[in-house]
Length: 110
Image 1 (cartoon, rainbow, N blue to C red):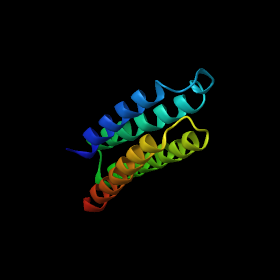
Image 2: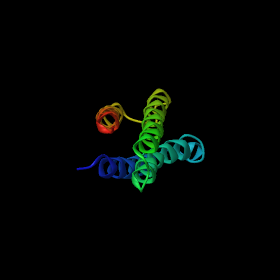
Image 3: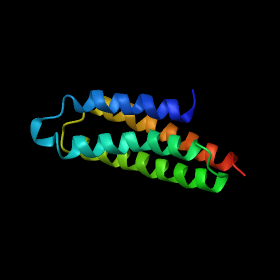
């Protein structure tokens, strides 16, 4: 699977996760984590379309930053007791792997 495909799948998993958020978090943390998760895939896609390698690297950096934002939102959700430990661990580990893969892709570009 490509990093873009992984980012798309993780964004979908985030959307399933936030379906269970309480109403008072729907426009706060839920909105923030979904936008950040979507941003990972969107930045990878945007950077890959006819850009120079330095431009693509810049967009990959944006994707990494958005993935780190998702991880921070996961921590907040766990702290607020709206994300279970098992959901936290699963998504945290998957985002950690995605960040490594995006970094490897970035490093492979000349």
